[in-house]
Image (cartoon, rainbow, N blue to C red; front, side):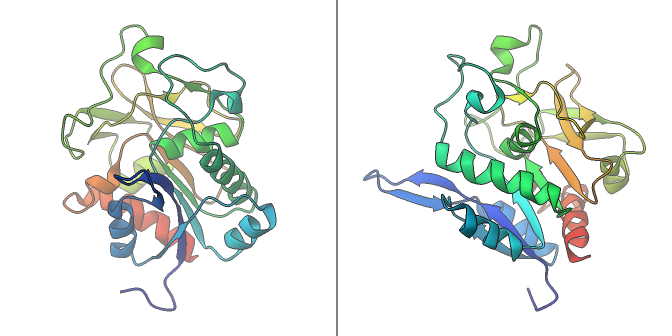
Length: 243
């Protein structure tokens, strides 16, 4: 249970449309559960247009989690929109890209998951493949959702030895789920690739010069309830935020 020593972790929201098309802001409970198990106090962050308010929110946090969701507007990394790129959310892009930049500049621990690794990469000056199947010849399938369970282990990732990620999971190979159709193309300055899938798709990045900045292309929150190594990623993030 959270107490006064629990680090406050911001988790950004996505817009969810109800059956009557009323917009709601929320996020998968799996992220919250993984953070709670790690001893954090999660705080959901809405889309915020006012820069001052957004900076005030960030100033109260100990760590920032950028979760999964829809596609980032390719204009944010200087490209025109591919036909396979889904409709972006300008509000969410504005909120998350600003928070990601500011958090890294402030030395705040940041964990990006799926869309989150992409937000982190774009915020720091990198680019994305807008659709793996259309833009990377010979790539394996990576979008094993919604027709398969979110915890389906679809392939392994190879982790670069001696990276922060390798130390966290105590391994250089890890089976992961795969629920994405986009991926990192050019890693941003300051980020290094720390894991790839067998077909060469970037599966993790990290910032060696930063206290804790890691992006993961898979969804460990969907595995963490039964997989100790997946939960360890959240434990390490929360411990870094506590410091």
